Length: 339
Image (cartoon, rainbow, N blue to C red):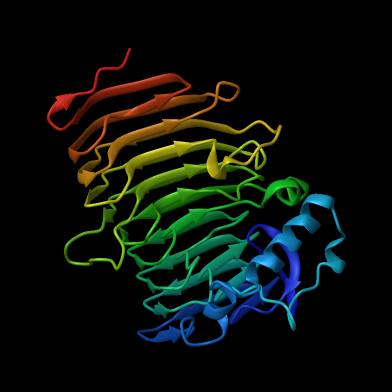
């Protein structure tokens, strides 16, 4: 059992398979494979129907909401919170390069409160529930480049803590750069949230491919761009810049921003602002654009320009957005006109 963070809430739980706390100058490199055996160990049975993972999940979330001291949030033996595969906690100067990560028990790479992190030419392949590829949490100055993700959940999900516990810690993720990656995960390509109560600033992603023919996924991805929060989570997303994404055959929406995630109710402001998406080309989806704001918390400063979407099944949804620009965007051959 080690001090860790589990889905955005601090606790003591099973150690990640590779774990470092408060360290400097760490590298995992080489043309090798780390295999978490997530589908053959006990982990899958914990999350399957009849397992006890959801009971412990609910208990930890209660502790975070009620402010139970972290020293009393002890899980591990006799409990069923699956560990992450690799977690760096409060570390600096991290390099992961030229490796393949297979079958995590849950989230694959999870830097928490870290600075100066580089992932270069890393492949992540996971089939178990919640097998996110990379989850930078309360982490800054991170580069993710040349990586490929074939995961059951989000490929890259930028996070900063959950609900009351995330606000208590209060550290944002910021200055995250993503380049030349391939996304074949089940949910988001580049996602922000949903555990982002400490806030997220300055996420920049360019030249990524979604579900390409040369790297087909087990699932069709659902959202190349997926920004998600709610009024229980609160927090803010300020500054997401996406350009030159290309993709094909996804299940849902190419651009999905929501402050109604999970239909959770609360009273905190849910802020998404300053989002710019340019030069996206995508063929085959439910819809091109879904901007799902709230009357109490409209999105501000959303700009979508020079994008081409073909074979979209449904029209756009634009609900509660202020300062919206849609310019030179075509859907099924027709230019989108928005006042």
